[in-house]
Image 1 (cartoon, one colour):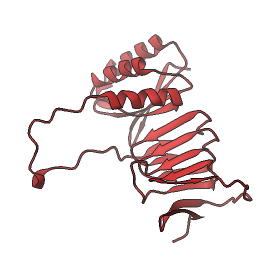
Image 2 (cartoon, rainbow, N blue to C red):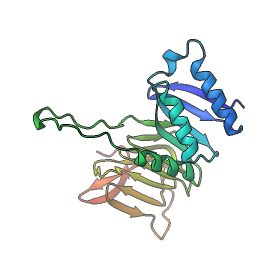
Image 3 (tube, rainbow, N blue to C red):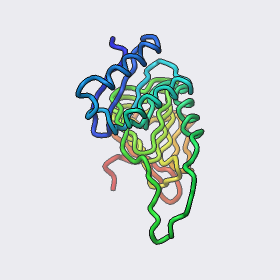
Length: 225
């Protein structure tokens, strides 16, 4: 397996890390970013990083972000173990906000930029993994028990959803959760929460969707109006 692999998507560049030593990973990434003709592919790209089973701390992520920044690349999402996700969240929250010099008049103020692009994941999310994204998350695969998926918009799973999910994590009550087989251990939409019933229901092998109606989370067939 190569130390690092790249895949272009409509949302940016998907980078997957191998299981080689960390220094070998970084050396390979540095070489790929400066190879002839690569600048147009990498420069200004948004990056989704898949770390697999590798655990990265704040120090490793800082090194990655610094190298990408030299090529005007932005790390927007990290897919991996919960410890790596926590380090990424901690690193992002620790970044200082830009200084406010002079506020713009209200009539001319622009809304803050948000990361609303969808994150597309073509694999099963295993127990212990946490996926967090500022837009919609689409999983082509299963979400296993013990896995956690958090999105500020919708969560759509083309497979079995049996882990913990939180759609509309920023407070969006219009968000929804859909799956071919919807059986989460915990489901949240906005500030509302629903847990798995104590008595297991019979398996429903048809696509279902969960959303808020009249202040309550309801589950219904995906084709319901």
